[in-house]
Length: 119
Image 1 (tube, rainbow, N blue to C red):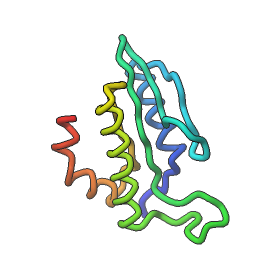
Image 2 (image 1 turned 135 degrees about the horizontal axis):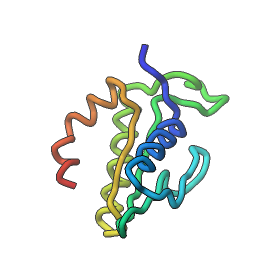
Image 3 (image 1 turned 60 degrees about the vertical axis):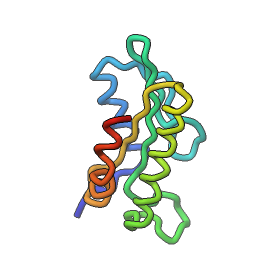
Image 4 (image 1 turned 90 degrees about the vertical axis):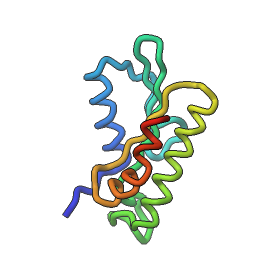
């Protein structure tokens, strides 16, 4: 069974990676907060990252603790990419997206990876 990472765990992993690469973390939002998931800066470049988790972690919901369905993964990937496009479109910063490394997310990203590389 694949790991069921929360959005906060994905964000924490990306922050650790960015720090290792010399990025300064300017802001970080938790899953229950509004705002950009990660805002980082390095050598005059700003980076805004939108992250998604692998399942529902809102207590009291019918899908609590369960992995997202393929349809939910499709929606979350689409929304994250749309947010990244808005960042790029407003010339605010470099944009990034972060997802759990599981089969459903890999499948969705593989279908648009060439286009994402160009962005």
